[in-house]
Image (cartoon, rainbow, N blue to C red):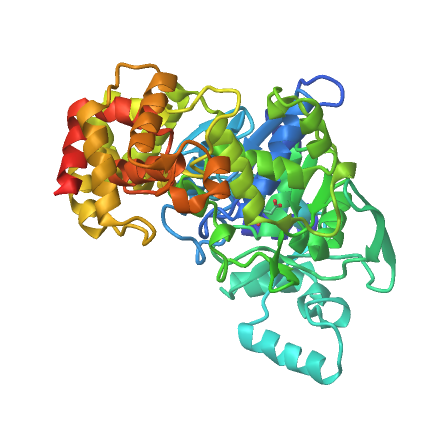
Length: 551
Ligand code: GLU
C-alpha cells in the first residue's frame, strides 16, 4: 500500500466500495439512440424562481422530445443556507406547472428511479467512494489551512492584484507529502479535502455549449474544496459525481454557472468521465423604464412562480408564454398550428436567443386571457374552483353554496366562435361576478353612481315601463326588440343614425336604455350579455332590482 492509499484509508476507513462497484450499481441507461437524460437540481434555499421553472421546462421538453428521462435531484449540501420545507414546495410548484419528472425526488421524502438516492445529503457515502479514490491517486489532498490563514492569503492577493483563491503557489497544503498529512490528521488537526488542479490560468480550454456554440475559457487552476468538515461535498463535486452516476447527458442551467465551467470540465476529465453537454441559458430580463435588467428576486413579483399561482394565471397560458421565449420559431409554429398541443412543438437549443429573454408580463396576460376565453365551461368551472379552494376563500364559499349557479355565470358566452374575454386570471372572477349575488348586490348598489347624462326622471320612466312588461321567456332577439319598443315609447331614437341627425328630438338612443338597464341590474357599464345575465338572475330578482332602484 503506498502512502496516498494509507492517507485515503485513514480518512475513510469504512468506505469499502469502489468506483467499479458504483459503475455497476448505476449502469448506462437503456434508452433509444439520441435520448437525452436531463434534470432539474434545485437547492432548497427558497422559492421557485421563474428562471428555474424556465430551465426545468426546457430540460423536461428536451427529454420528452427524444424519448429520454427528466429527473429531479435535491441539492441540499449547503445545509447552512437551507430553508426548511422549501425543497418540497419547489417540487410541488414544478408539478403544478406541468413540469413533472419521470424519476427522482418527488417531494415529501418520496422518490422513484434506479439512480438514487436523489437527495444529495443521502448520498454522502457515494461521494466518499470517489473522494477516497482521488486521495489514493493523489488527485486530492487534505488541507489544514485555517479561516484566518485563508483570509491572510486573500489580503496578500489583493495587494498584489492577483487572482483570489487557492491555486499554484498559494495552494500551500498541496505541497505537503502524504506522510506529513497523515501525521497531522493523527494529531487531530481539522481539515477539508481539496481537488489537486493541474490547470493553468494562462491556458485555454475549449468548450462546446449547446446554446452558445464553441467557446474558449481560461483553464481552471483552483484547488477547490470537494469535501467539507461537515462530511458533505461542495456543489461542484456533487455535480461531477451525480451527473456521472445518474447518467445525465444534458445539463441546462442558468448562465451564472458559466464561470464554473472550466472547473467542471477539469473534474470530469480528471476522472476520465464524459462530461454532459452543457446548455447555459441566458438570464431572463425585464424592461424597467426602457432599460433591460435582470428579473430580480427582490424587486419583481413575477420573479417567483408563486406569484402566478396565487394570482391564478392559467398554467396553460403561462407555459405557452414560456414556450414563446424559449424558442424563436415557436410563435410562427403556433400561428400555423393553433389547435395542436404545445408539446407537439419540438424544441431545439439553437433556436434559443442569446440576448436574454425579455419577460413581458403584458404578453403573459394576453395569452392567459386567450386561454381562459377558450376554455370550455366544465374546465373553467373546475380550474377556477380548484384555484379558489387554495387562494380565495371568499370565491370558494360562493361556489360551494351553489355550484350550479356559479357554473351558469361562468358559462355566459363561452364555447363560442368568438368567446368573451373577461378574465386573464382566476383572481379577476370575483370582482366581476359579485353583482350576481344578492348579498353583494345589496351592498354595492348603495355606492352606485349614475352617469350625469341620465336624469333620474328619465331613468325612472324607462325602468317603470320596462319592469311592467319585460318577458324572459322570449328569444334574445324578441327580448331585445321589446326593450327597443320601450325605448321608443319613452322618446329614444331606435338607432344611432336617427339620433345623430336630430339629437334635439330625442332623449337619447336605444343604447342608452340598454346602458341604464345594465347599470341597474349589474351595477356596471360593461357586463356579459345582459339577456343571459337576466336569465340567470330570473324574473323575480330582476324585477326586485329595478323596483328597488326606482324607489
Ligand atoms: N443546485 C444548483 C442550483 O440550484 C443547480 C445548478 C445546476 O443545474 O447544475 O442553482
